[in-house]
Amino acid sequence: MNDMTTGSKRLVVVSNRLPIVVKQLDDQWTFTPGSGGLVSALAPVLRNRGGIWIGWPGTVDAEPESLTELLHEATRHSGYTLKPVTLDNRDKEDFYYGFANEVIWPLFHDLQSHCNFAPRYWDAYTRVNRKFAEVITENVESGDFIWVHDYHLMTVGQELRALGLRARTGFFLHIPFPPLDIYMKLPWRFPLLRALLEYDLIGFQTLRDRRNFLQCVRLIAPDLAVTGKGQVITLRVGGRELRVGTFPIGIDFKEFARDGKSDEVIRKAKHLHEDLPGRQVLLGVDRLDYTKGICHRFEAFRNALQRFPELHHRTTLIQVVVPSREDIPKYHALKMEMERLVGEINGQFTQSGWVPIHYIFRSLNRTELLAYYRACEIALITPLKDGMNLVAKEFCAVSPEGESVLILSEFAGAAAQLQKGALLVNPYSVEEVAEAIHRAIHMGPGERRARMHKLKRFVREYDIFWWVDAFLKAAIAKDLSNFPAPEEYVPHMETISL
Ligand code: GDG
Image (cartoon, rainbow, N blue to C red; front, top):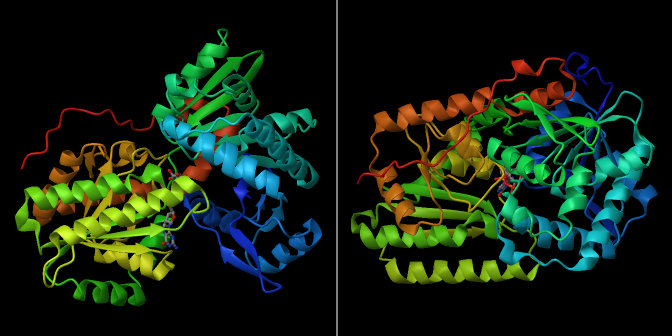
């Protein structure tokens, strides 16, 4: 760990899931890399700096001692150590599927009608957060910086204080923080806010999220005093002082740009496009999730095909959906609905030699994923709400300059940074997205190049290493005025001209 940045000995990263999933198959333990944005973002950081990663390895069957040994084996050459937190079936049901995925995930994405506020979920949440705190306390050394991640672990900081730990703690929320009116629906709104205020530093993806959080804090703490206006501000509340900052998460730009130019990726990308001659290919890549707006996107594509018949035969949408949380009925229902829509739209428009939507329901390996980023001319990334959306940034890093266009939801955190290069859309407006598709397909090489140039510059400059440094510096910096205020996206009246 970099002493210059934090003055700390080690970085202790804590997240719900470890970057490795442990499974038992026919009496054999298997390891597979974890998926999702948090793992993609943090794995290169720990590879680079070393440290400890504490989290749940995804199984409820193994004994803690054997898990520790297995994880030690699996990460022998990774440069960092994994420490497991063991969860049982009840934890998995009520904490993970329950509070995290049926309460916080939908509520924080403004989808309150998807919430199930079952009273037992909160007890499970605090119980499991205490388990995490206990494992942290067992593994921490003096001078360590403890960096807790995401919505599963919002009360860990408070539990650590209750266990008497004095180490410095930071928390980063990867998903959005909802506006006051929505947050207030949460039955446990006050204890949750009070618990968050026990961290020394809280990071959000965007200024919008931070503003929402501050409005909520103001309600429970009329004595709240805020100092500063930039990227990192100081709060004084209830006799405590803490910092709150905006840190838009990035990707390992160099690695994506380099791997995207490898012979294997170029060969595969060429091969993919040979099967779609003379077409401009639109690409969607998402975990199976109702926040990603996949069904709205299909409707927008249908609308584009209805209104602009010249697109027939000239464009194809490739939609990759990565299986996720499929045991939850809502996710299963979403899968059924997506598949119904794909069938219906393809049935409506397919002609000899042209199928409008190619639908892939599986996880791609990295080479395949990069080949799709490289081969497709237009990324269609239209989440209904998203903390950041790393797929948008990965597409920019890999796609050849001058050929590609990014269509991006204004409700993705990435919109704040990428607004000058992307075509921003309201994902709820089927017509607006259809018009953006039309505009992207007709966009000339000059405009494409200029836009992609800006996009790449932002993604390169604010990469994952910038993000880590900014967060860790914010934890210790004496002077917070050196942190520049980040970009903010404010919807405006730009009409898409046809
Ligand atoms: C959460 C927040 C925030 C996707 N398909 C495949 C694959 N992926 C990888 C992508 C990307 C990651 O998964 C998805 O990241 P996102 O950011 O798009 O979304 P979430 O998983 O919802 O992440 C999000 C993020 O945390 C980080 O803070 O941006 O808002 O919801 O890295 O590359 N990887 C492989 N095969 C696939 O088929 N190998």
